[in-house]
Amino acid sequence: MFARLPTLTRSALLALLPLCATAALAQQPTPDVTPKLPAVLRDARYCELVAVHLTLDGLKASVFNTLGFDDCPADKWDALTRRDLLREFDTLAVVMNGPRHFIMDGITATGDTKTGEVITVGGIVMAKRAEVSLSLHQAMGPSYTEQTIDRETTYRFDAGKPVFQLTAPDGAVYVMQSYAQIVDPTLSYADLAGLGSRLKPPAGWSYSTRTPQQDLLLDAKGTAIVIQDELKNTYQKVTAN
Image (tube, rainbow, N blue to C red; front, side, top):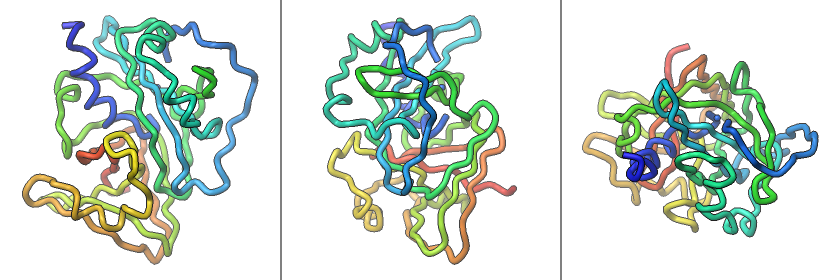
């Protein structure tokens, strides 16, 4: 079972990550720093590390995010190795989720989603965002499969700027919150408007771009429903307030 754990959890973790994540760490000491969002959040680069633990309550995923501290320099990120991360976090599996780029223009986090423990790994400063419980269903879920995560956030997409979204056969809409350079390291913000020609979603799904005339606020009041496409881009479901 443990030998298969990294494979089983990877797809689920990448679906659960947007701003979801702690571990008993032996990481480098981190100075007392205050998070500061980039002046322009849209297309800002970030990375996450996800440590998987086996607890009495099942699998738990602890997510650390660079937002507000670091833009995840490529040389430092690429230098991280699986062996070093497993030793660093003293856990069963660690997933590198990134680089990624935000699509929204503002983030407000409350409750447990606020900045938690700050750590430094390989010279990259990160903060704990949440802990996620994993089921076997989540661990094996394919692309375009809904996953529910615990999160208290409001994402703001400014009026007059493009929003990229997936629409399910039942009419449900999922707004892209981040694009990934994991499957395709060359994917850029400029590519997103035409991404529909590359994606191969299940029958009945569609990809589109629209420009809202008013600010779009995407709320997660305790839980968020997210999906990913086959390029690991992440979308949050639009729900009634």
